Length: 94
Image (cartoon, rainbow, N blue to C red):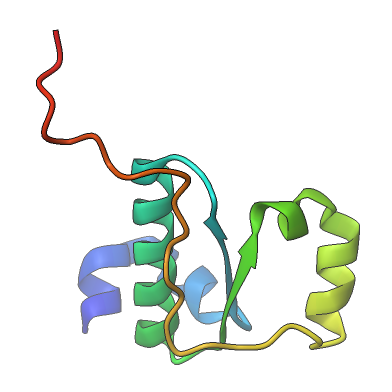
């Protein structure tokens, strides 16, 4: 039901996915937070394997693809974000 309501026409493409792989960080607070949140949500909603990788692992796409195809990366039920620094949300912007 949630897939139909939220994803509409993209539902068929999402259901064809074999798994969800996400760059967990390190990186920008907002980008990592949103990316990891969506990856965790999609994996859970679609009942697919979830794999978290670092920026360094994702840099070599050919090697990452080979590891994904060979299933040598561990799956997880939850991927935690890895931030480079604490969020700066309490200091007002000028």
